[in-house]
Image (cartoon, rainbow, N blue to C red; front, side, top):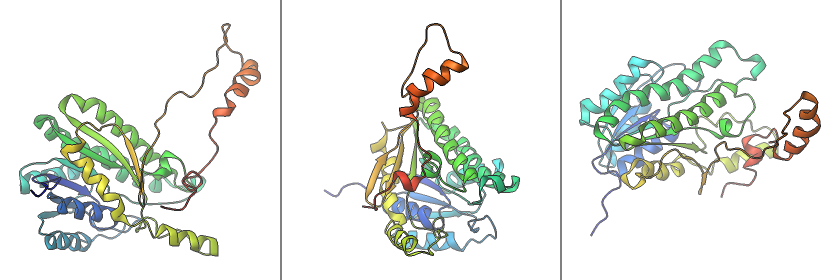
Length: 306
């Protein structure tokens, strides 16, 4: 007997679904039997322009797979517009089962040179956009007592990176938002998880490759194709993941990780309380072994993709 497709009869929204990792999610969901809403406004990585062609190309691929899909070009970064993305799923397919918050934009610049516009745009798309779309879908999920959120985070926020204060802050904020959603909506059978995808796509193609060392690194990164992240997303959107919520995953080529979440590491105590001097003489020396170094994602993931 043939195994039932994992997302058969499900309806899935993928924001930023026109290309890169988002396209991989759309195609994998369609291959697994889902009807898909391909949300993409077709802008550049810096948020400029606007074209329906990336989403149209993705929809054509969905149809080649024998799947069903619809294009939505509303922006996630506006409250009313985000609600129209959710309405699109209801209007065309009559239901909604999973939301993959993947839409993104980059404005990389060192913190001391970052403008208000560069900060605001990235936070609006990533953090506010994730909230807006998730909040719109929450009303449906709560009423039907089911639903799955998969939010895109990044090791730039979970670990750290140069020149991405806006992106890193937004992505770490999404991780906290996801945990709050998981806690608040657990009673309704709704789950919320995060994925930090590694992939060679438009988002990483600007990595410099001037020296031989940088060129070798880029060639290794190119092994991490967007589709490597899609199986985990399909699983998390499925009923087989109904007991998994509040987690942070990362995918790096053929590796799948669970990522840490903040917990106390060590404590020190003085019955008489602390003074600035005893903090300096006692607390800091005792706690120093637990301090984290100023590392970037590449320092922590120091081995080649497997």
